[in-house]
Length: 130
Image 1 (cartoon, one colour):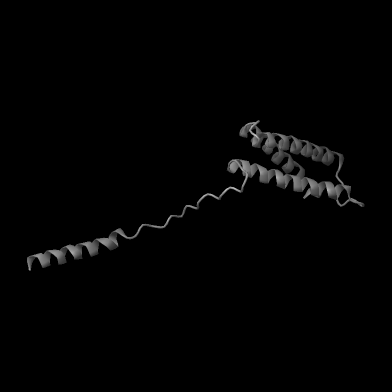
Image 2 (cartoon, helix red, strand yellow):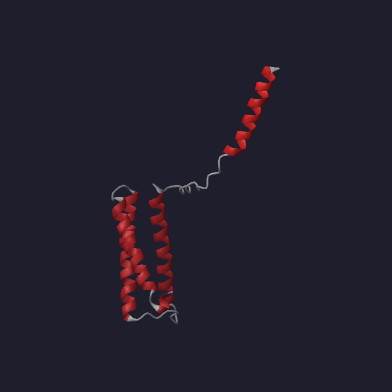
């Protein structure tokens, strides 16, 4: 009978302690997004996405400016900024491809991509370049 009382007391103690400790909380950390095939790392993928978007924006502005009649008629200052954007975009592409091929550093490629982003922001500040 003494053994039975000991088992009951131990069981009750265990049951009373369980609610106090509770279940572990679920993790709220989102796992990192998987890289698309062909990218070296997350920075590589991000730089590629930025350059693709910049190319699409450049192409849209170019198409709008060269349409007949022009949809967007940039001023001389806007043309200069647009041409600089194109030059930075070409240079960034070359550096990014060299980085992807192991012939340039990630820092070099990132610097060029940052230049493209800054110039794109400058171009987007013009009223007709939205």
